[in-house]
Image 1: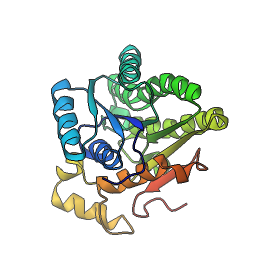
Image 2: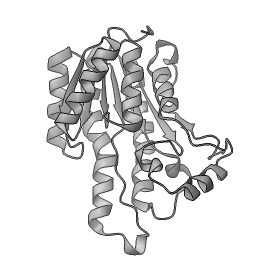
Image 3: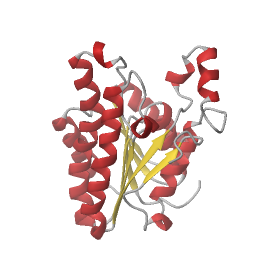
Length: 250
């Protein structure tokens, strides 16, 4: 086990697969106790058990629709009841409902905004209260390179992920004096179930658009999260860290 977060408690949304699972495993590797949040309790339970066994840390499963305020608040309360505190919150849960704007249904707009943006609000608000009392905390919100450069067919997704950036910068200003850091990670194209399902020729085009000429790994996002959770990152707040192979060079 890599030491560094032993004794700390981390809640990760969207933690059962892809980037979220990689983040959960990396924080467990560093010694953190975990809250594993997903929509399917059976899957959350299985993932929590696997991580707990692999890294010898406590991991508790929580089924929650992050778009539902009451469910998010209940999940945070359960986390506090179980561990007595929350040191780290990683808002990773997200969905896509891609379509050109002229064909984009209102329900698909609302679904993406409610899950990807409102879900961040739903967890940050109760977590911030607990962290303010403790005068310590780390909040990492997962945005996207799409928030910074846009993408045709993803107006709803880009709007939600860009909203996370503005929200996080504002929250960072509100909480900085309480020793709570709020930062954003903006991943580029990462090797997840979604990108794996793409035809090979599309993946090759994606690679060509990336200066690094490869698709990123979930573990590379997880390493950045672990860095932002560490004690030696305490003077970093309100920042957007792009982990995208150079896609968005501003």
